[in-house]
Length: 467
Image (cartoon, rainbow, N blue to C red; front, side):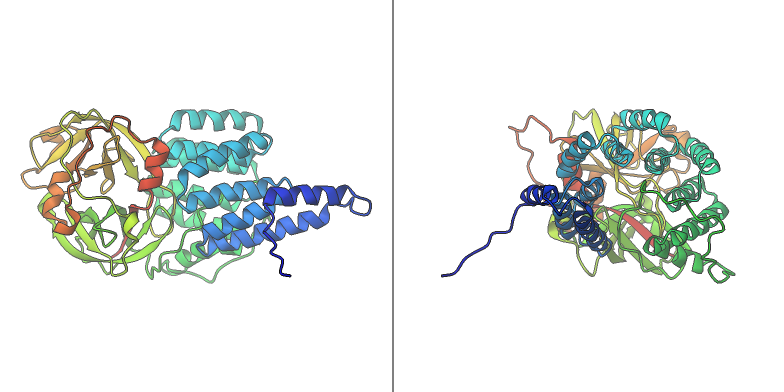
């Protein structure tokens, strides 16, 4: 007779483990803890190798052997990297409620709230937690990253420098200090803090975290052999604010320019700005909100409209592409920008939502529309703009983008955030990307922000150009 053994559910395993540990001879919880640690380590390796679904399963198994904040926080990060934003938010709230004494959970939940545009309450929550735990790295990491991405860079620099002055070396915080320097345009400080971050990671045994920093440092002119010994070893801590486990860009130079773009034509092409590829691009790489990297080639440039089209020799999955273009609604009051405010060959991050008001749907020149705000202010270029239903209505264009008939945009149109309307893209993208789905008349309720984030996360990309 054959028997089929069904795989026990993780929560059932937790019950069995608890009964065993309570029995005579099993009072020491270390065996279960060892299993949990092994599963967490394997899950982290799966994340680093670009397999977040596998990581989520391993984290779930680890949580099944007993309460483990590390496993449950890891599960939240795995869901986020896998593109399951709704599940990410739901589980993050559950984990934060189950582990109110673990600051990493509060930091992660606030970060997720900021990604979907709830910046004010997110910062308020972290600030309140920092009052009681001013030296916690996860809280400071989330707080400073939100400030940097929302272009409150001077405040981020102040907070980071104050934290660094009072605490032992910490790779995550030093990495964010370099990110703040990048946002501020201080290239010398970027090198200084990336070196310090690499040293701190290596001194704490976090060699994988140091690798992309060391690769970048090795490409600097006059680079000396790596100094891997930190003069002040960091204190042991479980509080972390790690960077996303995204694939590294295969760059051979630090002479790069970077910006935003979005995937169209069933995953085969990317729309971005003309200025990004205007200076003879050597290599172009794009990385989407799931961390997936593709090489790209310039296919078409419309310099007088500020637009460029890139072709992907290896296409993204069709489901990761934005749908076909359609006319902009006549009565449109609200919109949102979705993209990356801080980009270069090293910095990776999840895209964020910037809610905005449509000031002028049509300004009458250059095919532009005007909004109340954008990612990183009026200088942002290449980020897609959507209406509340998630339909593409434009792409942000900074004042540095040369447009036909406009020599001084600020003088002609005034200062503000502008985007080229989606109709202008018809001259750029192939007909296969110009399908015009009809708007449903019965549609009265827009998707939730969580639904929109999940749908659009794979379609927005960082564009990095080696010049």
